[in-house]
Length: 110
Length: 115
Image (cartoon, rainbow over all chains, first blue to last red; front, side):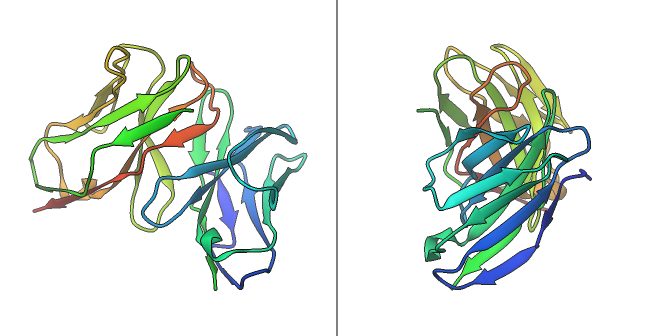
């Protein structure tokens, strides 16, 4: 079992609302990446944070934003939720040699 | 841009059968290649990886060889078990070596193994 935790486990929101998802990284890891996994699809890269700075971004609109804190934990914020934002959101904690995924947050937008 | 294509699924096998899941990729540079497994209701677990051409990754009886000439990284196992039932994802990293950059995933292959 990895030391990567995510909260909450499940979340239900309505269109137009805002949501914040949280990820605690593995001890010693300074990089966190976020992925969106729609039902029946492979994960899609949202962005990566390295030592509190954004270090790469996928093809997601600006209403997807993030933060990384000095302890290397991270938040994913999504504004103006749309129905298509319903998905499993995965964070991955890494250093140069290893990467571990968290169990994910299941977001449902109604 | 980078892309990963996996064989169409789902795959259904009997216990002790031979498994192959095909994976091909398109990438610039020299990516690292990975296979991840996702059990029902869980996150992704790294199954194996290869960081340069001709490397063979192996774990838990699964193997895959990084073939640069055919841009492939096919997953194989000689004798599957019911406990191998899961979704398998092929992925590449936009950074070579062991560093973990952006991962590009295939669409996943559902494997079901019957007793």
